[in-house]
Image (cartoon, rainbow, N blue to C red):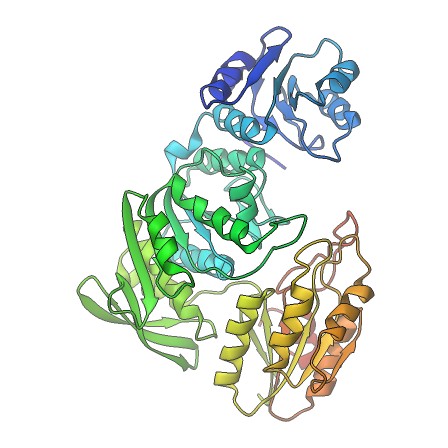
Length: 505
């Protein structure tokens, strides 16, 4: 990855910045200049401070970082004896709490770049990526190009790549904020995950706007959140670091959300058929190009068209509208941005030549997004045969293996279980768990090879009125297998091949 040259600072200055936040820190060895930070030994800049973090961290990583040009390192008390033995004479910072120390050190190392740009953070169980891209499209219509950080892509004006995490670790996040400012961009739109909030990835980052979309059960497992209460509490932390809060009145537990949102200097609300909201959508309806609705806000009403399918996307559109207005964007540019939007892998529609078979490619991957997705599909395609292809990820979110088949079976006529980022688990074993939790009256089968599973789905659908739902992977071109991310065809690409549609359609 490339980067602009970070400002020069010193180890003692970083230690002071960390200590000022109440985190214990000590400097071992002589003070020395440093530039920027890294958490990856393969991406170390000259004179960087290298952060040694993680249960799987090995001293060899530190040695690689120093050989690549790192000037010093940051570690916790427990690992310091071993690391100092492998890096004799190298100055380092030692803390008793590595995550907040890492966040505050990165903020100081990059010179508080958040003060130079406007940052909009979006959290919720579903809709974060869609809302981010809607807002990105609105900015583009207004002649501006924001940076974006999320589960689909990362683009900070200097680096651009397909994302692996929704919100990166603090060290990488502050580099992206710095790159955004250095590239001349004025806005950063970012998805903020519950993990980022719980594990201090966004600690110390002031958000100009924090948007709360919704809350549902997800990411509850021994390696993520131990309970729904912990998950929800983590999400609510976003309001501790924002100036303006934007809240969906249609969210579950909205009273508790609003209670926390009032900590912000300013609060705006939105909702579908919510006359009490600051931004409300009325008469939401499908149209040829996506959905249409009447926007009621700021004392008037305006017609809006969203260029993507899914009646539920009216909520995401309202969130984007509210944030765009905070940024000072006019309604004409907002309307243009929404009408011409394309969100990679989100409610992407691929039609057969005859139009009788439709593929819907979407990133829906949890209980709340499944309920919303399938309800919309059935409402818009009442008599169609619905075939769904999906799996569940490995090493996390174990509840999905029980919940997703039961939700999908309420709406789909046929289910095919396949590979979906199995990580360190056997994809067939995951698929067998899904099949075991499928209601007896819903036919299903297992095809581990995802491409073959999608081909089979179109065979089952036949040539009459049918909708093939390809879920969770969207436009992604990687599968998480073990510790690697091999390249694969995206669901969208395979759907176009199966229906004989050009790839650039």
